[in-house]
Image (cartoon, rainbow, N blue to C red):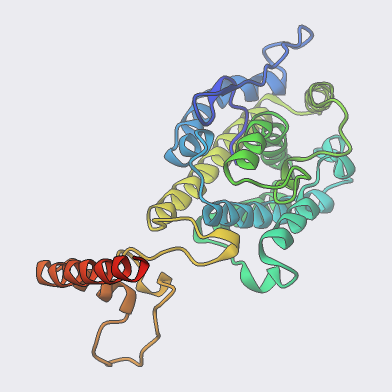
Length: 312
């Protein structure tokens, strides 16, 4: 999910704000400031993707939210695996806060809520998410100093704009007040998000990094935003094929467009078998014929007359 979204509109015109407090003790050459200034454009582009704009307005289907949760699970599994690998590496160790920040277990709880105990068999890593995951693994194994960029982009965003999205999702999807389904956004071991973020930035600024390495970290953070935007765009395209959100984990209604196999009434046919693959779509097309509509109208009129006579 996207990072900080101050003053973003969320559902029914409501504005949910998360105000950042400026730290007077930083200099323009500190990594936290370089990241803040160097990713502004990417940050704005991410906020203005169609998926994020729809989400903030409360226009999020449950099936799409579940897919987004899957993407987060694979992303954080990769990120936290590489963070564990580099927990003693001086280029990353000061930013290792597993108890406070790690999200994988929270995402497992969310997936169990949406899919049940057999959740592992029901999820898969999408193409856009896989590219993101591959990059995280490459960085963790070959350029661990750049892992700072991915951790900063994800966790600082989760503690900022993620808290806006939590409220929107809970209301729009009518999720329980006990926070099932949105554990990802709940940081039980951080009592004050603002203070923790200040600590995190101070730790980043204390890293022993030269100017070139800092510039590479900023560019990697922009790359992380691009990976996120690719995931958002992928979700947006999937969302266009979902004409109606299926409740309680059911199937989306197929509109006759896109991949026919997404239709809940689709029956797989052997290659070369003739005939329509989606009886639902075929029936809907038949109903739209004028003659059929006339016959249906006559039948309804007869049935209504019979019912009225019976009730007299």
